[in-house]
Length: 403
Image (cartoon, rainbow, N blue to C red):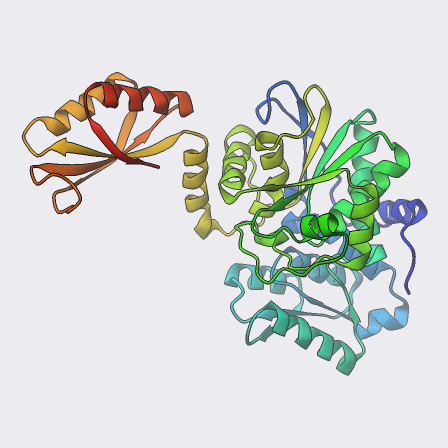
């Protein structure tokens, strides 16, 4: 069934996927970066909440009748699992999804809701992957790889076709990179249709597998990955996606978790749009990385929105801190009446809002007649924080720390 990636395959995928997926229209944004025309490609609004349904559905559609009868199997704890399960349901074929036992219950149940048989495997992702390969052999099922397959990549490449159809004069496309299937498909399509389009990839600083592979000239496997962008926390890219990135991608940058949090917050506040960490890295790159996009029509692909709501509050707080909207000062003050009033009055006079105060007398690193005050405040931006800091210092107040 192995076929090569080409434009005919991508156009066939666009036709096949029409009744299955949503064509996600571009959303203009004036808030991401001044001086640049930013457009958001909201794949977080896709059915299943992620672009993954495109590649999975197209690969499943191309199976022979005999292969469909035997069914498909995949290994994933997230978006790929749901994409495979939904596509199998659409075509009326059996599916098994292998997940590590510790996978979030919300993701397990979302996958189950699409009709998949769930196989929970003791251990971590690698154990689930090995079990999936074992079941593939035992039952004669087809394994649907999350990224390193030409049909999967062709399905993801339909995003590039949609972008070029809607915005033919696009200058730059910024794309998240995990295993590389998404950027491989988009970059291939963009360069075939207009070689002048620049395509930049984005990885998390805690999971730069494709970046290091490209820099070192061969595929590398990371010993560990650590990022809130779990959807792109891939230790090793595929050989096919590596080749596509080598040939068609103009550059790869990395973003920190704090920058990702700030991007999630911006999308939430300015566009009423929920993005997961992996989906928001393209916006984070436009906000914080020194990419040459000033004055250019730039598309940020927001690849998914399946974020665990239990972590959203923490991410919002980190985003507020990164954007200068939330700050905590630890200050040393004389332990006598009136000091708290003095601090509160000063902060209020500068238009900031105090949201919490912690008064501590037991700190052994300060003067015996002093105490530590930790004041968390809501602020407008970094300039506002700087003004408050300067005002405190001008009053002779010692600042011990800031976060």
